[in-house]
Length: 152
Image (cartoon, rainbow, N blue to C red; front, side, top):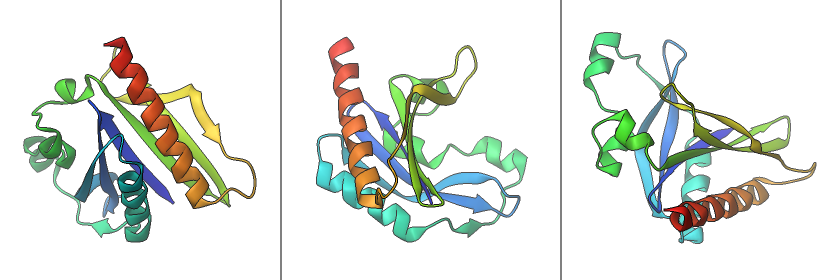
């Protein structure tokens, strides 16, 4: 199980992660858009993503892919990766063999994209549930978003 979202300027964008026929993961519709402070809305968005799973979608040729904006950009109202990355951090929730892991990512410098932040990687104790993992992720989203706002 894998669910990921992007947090930008007080808003959480949670796409569905599909696997294309080439084996690459791509963000697809539906994208949930929820305010950081709406814990119940965030909880629902994460549970909906888990319920939808990881659909298989046709691969898009590289040339076509270069012409398309990632699906999340439309909801965030941006037209480039550099603008989107500014003030954005992703959070991933994954589960393997009954163990839940939450990772807050940070900007990868000097390159575009993000990388796992080892100081913000959390493995939940044995016996934790999906509900526990989602609640912890929401807590991290809200804490980091508050810290970002305070630092601005």
